[in-house]
Image 1 (cartoon, rainbow, N blue to C red):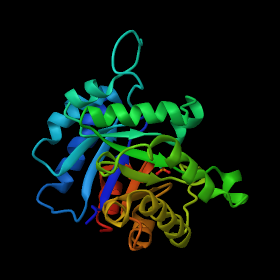
Image 2 (cartoon, rainbow, N blue to C red):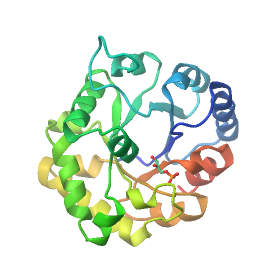
Image 3 (cartoon, helix red, strand yellow):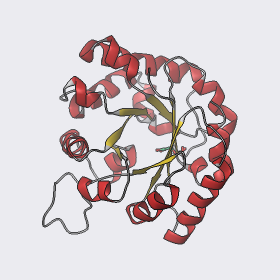
Length: 251
Ligand code: 13P
């Protein structure tokens, strides 16, 4: 059966020293506990190797927040999936709405990133979700369908099986506005139905679909208790160990 997952996305926060302090706090606060979910922290590239070493032997796994859409070569400033993998990270967030919006990452670019992540043994955490105007026009289903078809439904079932999906309504990210559990469950069920249609029931049943967008300790339980919500991708509330732990404890 699919895994429950609570994954942090630190975004562009924390110096190396602050990130090490946060990862250490989280490791200590989880020490001796047995979370009922997989715990992942997504950190900026520069933290990855240090943090991956630091959390070795704990329940915490490490993710990058992005990777390049090219394998290697003259792409100044870029970080490849192979480089990410070499740090000890096991996951890579791909297709976050901030990357789509601010760095103009298209379906094709994201398709290449997903492919490279998989080729290098990383599990993509692939993000989808609509903006406010699309929700207001009731177009959210069409949006997530196009995002899946554009970047991941080209994969064979075996590779698709390695992907974690994260539904993040853009209007709920960092705004304090959360999708209601009913709104989230409805679209998560729709996303799973698309996976069923494409890959069959077994693959769909095994696919973890996380919710992201102003998820915190106080609303996590209401969200996670729905049948098609398998955890969360957490921004702001992943920046303090106690806040993140409160979400882990929702399971
Ligand atoms: P917030 O939890 O800060 O709303 O961010 C969600 C997110 O974008 C996680 O990737």
